[in-house]
Length: 373
Image 1 (cartoon, rainbow, N blue to C red):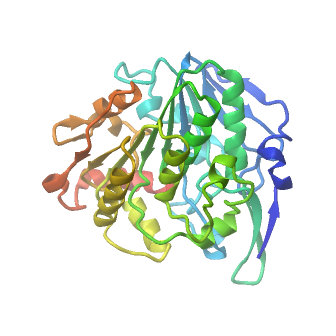
Image 2: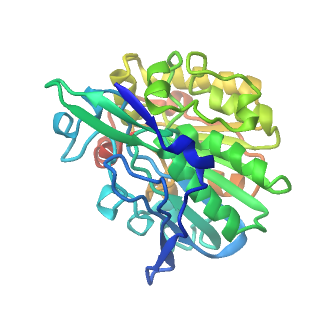
């Protein structure tokens, strides 16, 4: 297996061409940054921007699966409901267009707490939880070669650089992510906090808090995650063999302690359960989720969480943002308050967590599952 850097990231953004912006007619702009950005299959990367209040910016890192081996990266070997374990392109038919989503992107809903915010939607199509920095060649079962452009961090850096230039006066920034984007959202919250030292930076992750396992060294290595790290992370000496998923929170908080961190998860999230098994650590999700929560609550004074019953996956992309309620607290109200900078309570379903057998949840999760991590 071989790894090729994307020109040593070229300063992560130095080779970006001037973005090509297309007006969508719906308030959203499509940005294709060019340069070294790519999707997994080599196709062009694009992301979306909706301009509103330039002092309040919601950055959203989309989800869409992951791959880390020939077995998981080969589309021919891993169809899932007509798709794959990861998104290979950034087109609308891959769930990467916010105009097709609900929840925080439903601009017709008067309850939407982000209707008046500027929104930047970072599409996801690289199979590396937005953290990869290089192309990797996998050897398939028949001896062939499969090249995957794990350029998630290069793509994300293009999104960040665009945001920095377009909204320099932002005062409140919500750095959010779903599934794969949930895992890397604390990293990007730290990046944003470093650029906006006087702003309030709030992190929110949906559908990524339940993975309880040793550091996934082979994933970090195949994705070249620890190449060209930013100074704030280099100084903490994180490495491939020592960095677990919880550590992204610990590292971000150590560098920028003012960030407020938040997680939303369902107790029996079927997508997280599936991927934890694929990674070789099958186990009931809720005990690991609770253990991760306890670790973060002990280490981070600004960490809060919401654990809902059921098997659903993520929150902000779906109408469930408006219908979920746990222990008498609507998920919508919890999200609205944290986005406003308020200190929210930890919410946990406890006895009401029940079992992963809700028919409504099963239907919802089946619809969401192809989007993966």
